[in-house]
Image 1 (cartoon, rainbow, N blue to C red):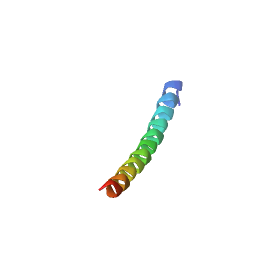
Image 2 (tube, rainbow, N blue to C red; image 1 turned 45 degrees about the vertical axis):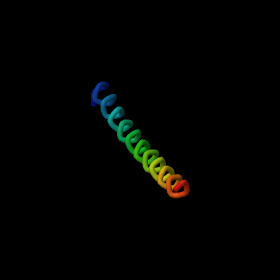
Image 3 (cartoon, helix red, strand yellow; image 1 turned 120 degrees about the vertical axis):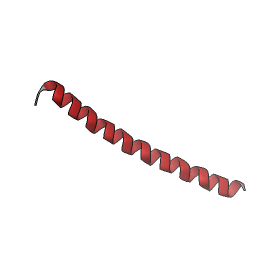
Image 4 (cartoon, rainbow, N blue to C red; image 1 turned 135 degrees about the horizontal axis):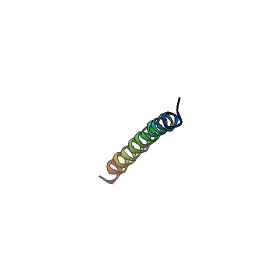
Length: 41
């Protein structure tokens, strides 16, 4: 594999990791918001 190919592969892997982390944080935020709204109403 060329150096540029390795960089692209690593970048793609990292992008997937960041997307998974974003999904977890978004779900946690939505859960927190729903809990707050249930208590506030």
